[in-house]
Length: 334
Image (cartoon, rainbow, N blue to C red; front, side, top):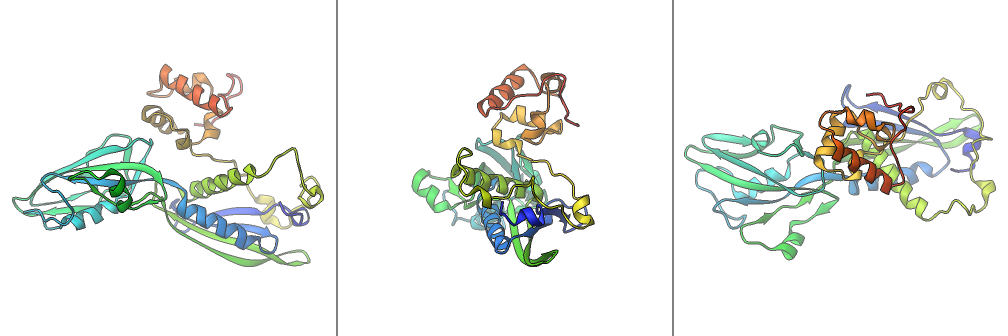
């Protein structure tokens, strides 16, 4: 960190929900920061939050008896283009990376919604009332929708060029779970220093990640890039890198009461099989940090967690240089 932090202390990160009990929309305050660092951190975090977080989206649809999106269906009020646009609005959570096909079938008169979709436990619908298609009396529709997990934005035109298949209509896929990011930089003061800054960051997600998880993922992604350019063995101009063993004490009651934040790395990035992942999440293990605090006996007591799942967890952690806790050191609170 900047050498100024030795004088003013560590920045304090505080989080507050925009609406009480809603973890998908939160405002964060980070400060005090050296001059210019509010814009530097805010812009970097905003770009990563909007472009690089993993999420799930519909990527293609196949409707029985329809060859292209400019068709109409007898007994169906919506055009095929409108149906595709409605499917594009689906808010989903997917636990594995593998593509999956879900189905929708119905007869009119009826309005089919997201809750009418047939899918496996690997996919979760976040807004069940999203309208997909309205059927008149005698109308009928039978469709298959492909759901994939990815990052960023994938236009339908690009898929058409690579995977052109008759009867399969591709949809613009917006994978990002972050719907809105806004940041502002305010002036801050510590003692006689009046040129410091405080970063205010507001994040809103679709519910597949909480706002706090999104911020943590973005910070960890940026950290991985910065560490790529740095080596611990070589420190350039070490006198101008903050050493917090010499840092001044934080001023004010707010710093005294600031909680110690534990790092949180979403367990989904380990790419476990759906069965293993669901067993861990259902048992309350949602991060790599929580998983490494578990012992083999703790994992074996989880519902649906067998010997194969245990071997998979140990092998995956081993690839990253991690391991489960010893039997006498488990500290996880489930």
